[in-house]
Length: 190
Image (cartoon, rainbow, N blue to C red):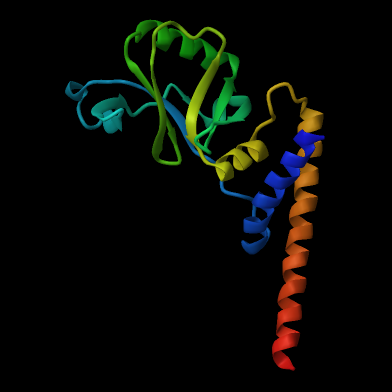
């Protein structure tokens, strides 16, 4: 019951901006994970980012992106932002294992919509195909992820049902906004 209430609140939070935008789908989140590189790799191969007060360089080519995510599970932090665990397909899971084995004691950074949201030092290989962003994800971004990917443990049918409910909520919010606008116009005309 609590999960359903939270989902309804999140769906309404997403519905209102999309209703204002004329019923368009919400923007997709761009998330990618990058391994630390070196300045010697050159500006074509790396980009600078501030991590824990230090300027470090990271490989421009990500080890994983949003198009390889199979599911995710989010959680709320005491700071008011969210974190999430992202599960990846088999091919990228193997790539994550290889990179985290080869690049131990280096930084791994998560970029979300053009900003660094989290970073960790790789201390052991990641063999389960899951990467965690511990902090820094905004509520609207979590809602976008819920629209784009199934929740971990959710079947495709449950996900489709959830999306259908979301679309119905969004259409209801659009209708309500339209009715309010009509009412305001009538009241101004008096």
